Amino acid sequence: MALPSFQVETQTKASAVFGIAAAAALLIAFAAPLLVSRGVIQDLFFILTMLVLAQNWNLLAGYAGLISVGQQVFVGFGAYAMFGCVILFGVDPLVAVLIAGVLSTLLAIPTAFFTFRLYGPYFAIGTWVVAEVVRLLLAQWKALGGGTGTSLPRDATRDMLGVGLMRDVFDMKASQAGDALTYWLALILAALTVGFIYRLLRSKQGLGLAAVRDNEQAARAVGVDARRMKAFVYLATAFITGIAGALIYVQKARISPDAAFSVTDWTAYVIFIVVIGGIGTVEGPIVGVIVFFLLQNLLAGYGSWYLLVLGLIGIGVMLFAPRGLWGLVSDRTGIQLFPVRRMLKGGSLNQTSKGGPHG
Amino acid sequence: MTILQLEGVSKKFGALTVAEQISFAVGEGEALGIIGPNGAGKSTLFNLITGNIATDSGTIRFCGSDVTRASPMARCLSGMGRTFQIPQPFEKLTVFENLLVAGSFGSRRQEHEVSVRCAEILGDTGLIDKANVPAGGLTLLQRKRLELARALATEPKLLLLDEIAGGLTEEECRSLVATIRAIHAKGIAVIWIEHVLHALNSVVERLLVLHFGKVIGIGKPAEIMDSRAVREIYLGIEI
Image (cartoon, rainbow over all chains, first blue to last red):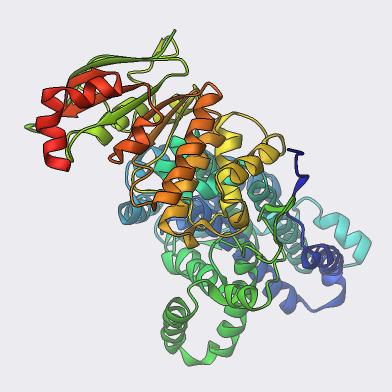
């Protein structure tokens, strides 16, 4: 029998076009601080940092099956690590952001040691408990303001790496330059995060991760090291979430334990974004964060009704579109912007099925 | 040459003994059938061999090394492939991707190195038309074939099949037997748990009878089927 010539494809037409469009959008986004007002830049910063958090939570829950409600621990710990470096040791805030990422990863090691013994809902509760413990511990740290919190010294942000340069080149005020700089960093962080996750999912490890999520016992039986894979994802997301948390608080310049470890701000909203956008896809969190931002602005004047409406929308999506808004679009049109499916082509295959997204 | 050797393997779940002093060996390229009434401990024995359940005592040697304490993953990597009695597909992955996972991780190679082989296995097991369909959408029979295909993709030296012919029509059963014969002919050792005796006996060289966790007979299929004990405890119940 002659061997049929099989090929494996992951690219789609839409994804090739989208790749070019995304590159163009990224270029425009880089120029944004020179084109739009400071208020818009701050909104974009918020969107980008929430996108980073959402992509990370999606990787954890949608791919590694680790449903954590305690990711605020890495936001808060990263932020406090950055504050500690700046206030106690006089480190430049931007360098402190990187240190914060490393320290968050280190924190994730003992955290994983405890929480990985738990499964499913118990893991979720365990992560929340860890987050509360770390919050209570840091609230005791008097040098960083204890329970009431503290602010970054004015000079620290004004003399931040690159701010002086931007003042000279673009003729910006220090505060404006600071916002532009944090925005650019958020943009780079978001692009790298999406890039990293997409690369991971297209790799052999990504395929193994999807197998572990679908059926851990069977994955082990075909030689996948499920434990190691989950640990890697957990540590990687701790690193990125820690960096995002630190960056968010360079921009806020004021910290308190309750705000930095807020389960609503850094986990509930993030879960909302991932769920309405579409869990288990790279596109989902991008759609979700835009919808979330629009809703937040639309409902800003309605006080606590805002949370109520968010909750109702979340429930609605879970009931009627369990794969999120992007799932609806993708199911109807077959479009995938970040395809990870390995489609078998050639041989005697009939080519009708599209396979759909992984999630 | 022996590929798998069990010596005095025992397991208790509380007061219930599910494996008692089980000892037997399987040669390289041999096909061994395991029969026994429901609840005899056949699937438990598989789980002990593959490491999904830890033994209480006894040793299991595979390819010359002691694997009694090795994880299921490590045993897969050293050449054990298995199917589950209740199929366990990766439901959100396509059939082809199910094989890619098994092929690339099970044989420690890159995806592109195993993709053609995976496609061929899909052809051999009659799943090629379903290659790009999510495994969650398969029928029970297709899921059973996927179990077999996925185990093959790991490039096993020993293949453990757990009731893979149950519920098949006569025609389907014949084609499955042909597939397993072809696998066996390539020199892969097979241990096959099955209630469909004519299918089993047309492939295996020896039969092992399990009853309440104990081996009560092992030998050529014809001798085993004739033995008094087997007739009483097994055939008396089943037929």
